[in-house]
Length: 191
Image 1 (cartoon, rainbow, N blue to C red):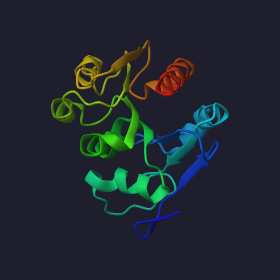
Image 2 (cartoon, helix red, strand yellow):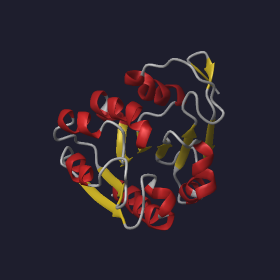
Image 3 (cartoon, rainbow, N blue to C red):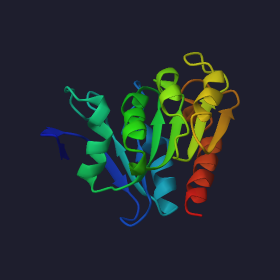
């Protein structure tokens, strides 16, 4: 698709009227990672409208200059999505945290997976009203798992999931446990 005058690759699945779930990715990955893991199919079959994007310079999206502070909100608007659950691993915290801070009304739920920017944004997000499922790998060597509790404390309502034996891309090491928790979290938003 064209976005801000440049190509941006995306994968979509699921019913158009389902709760939108925006899948972002870390620095070593792209939207295809979610396909290979089965996350896109799983969520689509459960009735969610899934959008997985390749951030600029990753996967099939060419590199270009973007403003991280407005990228995510402009992307949601471009996609015609009022509110989405945002799944944000690692590097993508750079675009998801500004969305959460400045436009919490556009985020139906937040699933950070050891995101970049935790130290900076945990203080700024004080009592964020968006429900969160904070995911971390027990053996994360990049960001210590203790940051999960720090981040969770920034939300009015947050659950922490530490995946045993998992490293930094925890969802890759423990996909079944991650998927189970993600589906449970999404179902709780429908209540």
